[in-house]
Length: 95
Image (tube, helix red, strand yellow):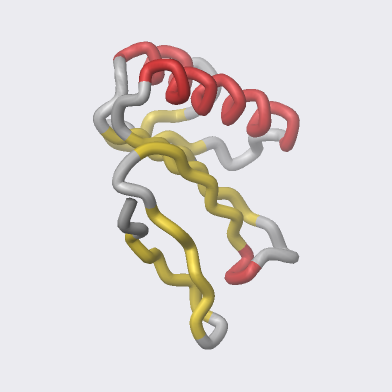
């Protein structure tokens, strides 16, 4: 699952070509390969580095990770995923 917030329209066109848009800015693909996911993340994170608007969050399953999920994000507000007593929580990071 990939979530965009306050980003340019180019993201929507690109992401819609590979994933289903479930709601505005929320994309999912249950059978996305690791290679495809890494390529998509590379493109959108590079765009974000160039354009700098909004935020993008990628969430995908990983049995070895805390809570069984990997969370990657770029943009503002900056969020950090922390583990507390075996539960994953989102913490807002002050710049």
